[in-house]
Length: 456
Image (spheres, rainbow, N blue to C red):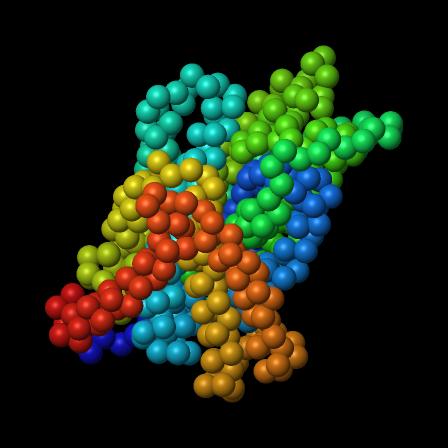
């Protein structure tokens, strides 16, 4: 019988990277930032759906009821179980193989839609700047090439991805610092009445905000490659939550002061916003170019960091016997699971034809369910292993651990209401998501039979 990774020690794990360079605090903060955010890109739809006041309120409240609970949960579980495979290991160890498989299934299926968002944003920002480059089928080809480059980059190892992510984060945020500073000093001084929104969709704005604040758990899957994970993870979570929230609220709030019509915002439109605010002689075109480059860097950086995270799931599941053993093969020098990386990249490329909104709807639904399972893992592990060393512990005892997941659950219910109205061909997004969830149960029983028979 295959010994589950969740019951093995870190030193004895197959594929442990004891001889490889490890990810330290600042690169981990950058990796978490890119996994969750990748910059203010994607916020444009919140402003167009909810207006400035609504957008700022959503961006301030969502981290309190969605991001902060998830970050606290990740901080405790990652410091208690710093093993490669992260949230899959948490669910497996606390609730058994069935729920471990479901956690991994929901995360992997959700990732198919999530990972298509970043090439879509990449092509969108490039198209705003130079429409001819993405016309026709060239946009899809660019997206496929972007995924291929990210896969190759990840084969070089987690340390390389983390270090490059730190540089990308600084570069992509720089033009927004310039835009916010200019907007703050050139605020609207007249008391003009705001223009009414053309398409008010508060739930749609919340849905986009949830996506922009989602992904804290993704950093947990590389715990086996992080330096001093018990200390590093809680610090990284605190730093990343602060950085994400500030990088969202500050530029949107600064632009709001200028009185720019909220209806002028659209997906991929930060460059257009900068052109509308800065006069031509003040470098508006140069800043638009810088923001476009930042959007490209943000999309590349997020795709890169998430490839590092999500490719570890099929590799760890293969080592546990749930997936074919070939997916567990690692690069001899970097330790990267190169077969799993290639497999995931091929799956992600399949959804590049979906629209931005449809990708977010399916991603938030599936990944949101996996996050709820992680909150359940937090409680179950407290019950099953109360003496397990926890360098960081969510305050409030058992009541605090249970209460942590209540607000995220309420917010996910709102998304279910919104998803029920989102068409997706002959069925809606909620029905399609339910089918994908049910397939996870079916595949578990087939995979478990093969696992017990030792046939994979």
